[in-house]
Image (tube, rainbow, N blue to C red):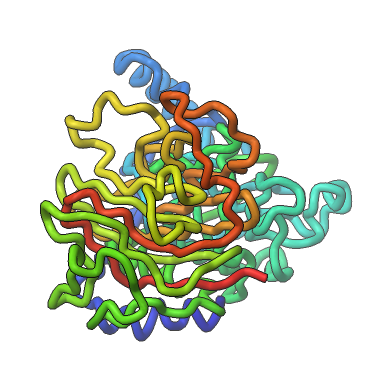
Length: 429
């Protein structure tokens, strides 16, 4: 990941200078402008409150925070108690940098998108060694035991009295953390503490936890990532073994409805408007992962054919067709849940709310192992299913192809000019 990060922060950044956003200070060094108080509180429940109830809660929490947070010499200081300091702004894909200094017995953390947390420990506190304090700070402590990111890759904490630097990049739920220049989390999925099994909220605030002892913060800054940067971060991470199946110039290596698709001047595959059919790889795949980017027009509809035969409707004849769809278009307001983007068509519904706006490029990875399918959209796992366990189908329509163990990968065009690019496949052994 270190090499991938270098590519992301240097070579790619040089190509995308015009699209990069600027760093914004989260703390002005003088007062709590831009922050409010909020304790460890379920953001979904907060959102369900009326506007008046929510404002009242935040007013109460902010008053509490102000009695425990202060500013000294350009530093944010917390006495170990009170509501967490919470940004007024919310963030989706972003880069965060800050410094902290703590004392013995203190226990703190950084909530991302309102979700716990990048952990900060007293690594000398033997009473918390059973919780992982001896392993060090900078990991996603609330991830499940054994999950990637749960424990830090290295012990990188500095001694008490010294400032620690934290650097975080988060795209969707994919999270990387560096503590004092050493990587402690490598592109791990940050689990949703509030709703296990769902991705993180699409956006949320940054929170500074208070827990048991004084902690000081300074030099807090955030930089939102644009679509190009966010997609590059995902595409360049852990990309070993992926082989391109589209040269950006021709449809060499593809079969099927080659006359119904075109290669654009921009080097993308596009279904021609008003035409369709299945565009498939010449090669068949058994267990594999595919990475690609796609761009939807308004009302756009296409699909990914998974283990497809050369003939037939991939939704039924293939293992499945994974929907590619403009979920928010009014024309699709009343679909079956198993027809929206990322769903195994007619069999398993994907989580919604993670597509980028129409006209922007999305990054997606699909991993197919045996009867299981996992779909990750813009850094968020929106589908994780085992089709062999599904026996409830939309409209009671049978899916005879779902037991296929190999087949072609491709696109199931539905007359809309949906575009695809950066298509690569890794065979899984």
